[in-house]
Image (cartoon, rainbow, N blue to C red; front, side):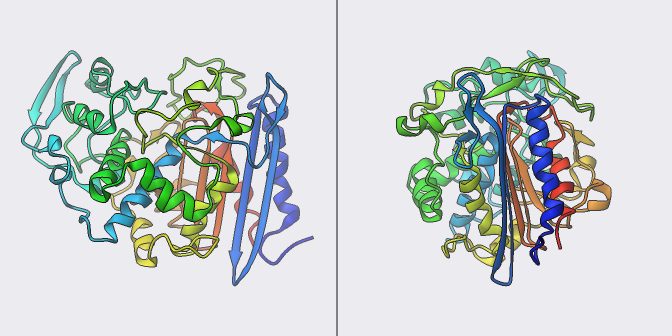
Length: 421
């Protein structure tokens, strides 16, 4: 049986693949959602396998709530672009206009030495909104090693926005001010580097909207889109649906595969009891604070395959804004600006738009996809992509840290795209 949008027989390969990841013992459970829309018709394929909680033998379901970590970033990016549409700022405005602690005259850039004796120079370029949206700000994470050991300065000064990084009980505003005292890893706009950029965008949402970041996200995005199970914590009545998180057994917690060599089978062990998600956090992290389900995150993705209008007819963004977010805003690909492999994923042919990675050159990327495909993932091996050419989006949820353990994202690309008609 084949619909006119997807070859259902070929789609069975996705089901087999997902089942196999569980039967091989690579993950406890996995859930996928594939949606293709065309001329008013829609083809939906959804499949869950395995367990959301191995210890309690609870099945993975489409409404299983998972930590989506960095898949929070596109939602925060959409929030800031909604404020852009209200002419609250321009892309190349310095963020110090709204967060004075990031004034360029106070910022320093690491140029040599090593922590604790990092050689610093005054920063010459101000961090702009575009730098934050494209991860070219010079900010890093406290768990991502860099040449001069700036990440160790983050650790020593408790720069952390999520429980995963070890956040303090201070406000988002205070944490951004603390972050602003850290050296930058490079001059803004001269490289690409993952870090707390989107957390700062969360704070900018507050300053520009006059609402707290979490209220803005809840009132202006989650509620209108019907994302009923997406939030910054898991209330008591939903806890039975909250997945357990696991980490690859053969890895240290944050030892990241970087050599482009994927594990064959790393096994997995339980990572904490999830209780840090049982209450409202002190800091709502725009870079990694949300939990969600495959159904809910699909509702967010629907906005982008439909030029700014969600599945339920709610317009979140204009078509032109979505087009702009879908452009590569870097001067080249990430491989040229930064490094050829990041968290085990090839960066050749991959650009970055306003909140999403952009497939600039599928041939160089070496993957079956359309030019302009928008994507990202999360620390617990979750992923999504949005293909505006063929009007397809895919959401993959599982709970295995780190995301560099297996090649799920690239495998699934091939398996879904080979079934398109």
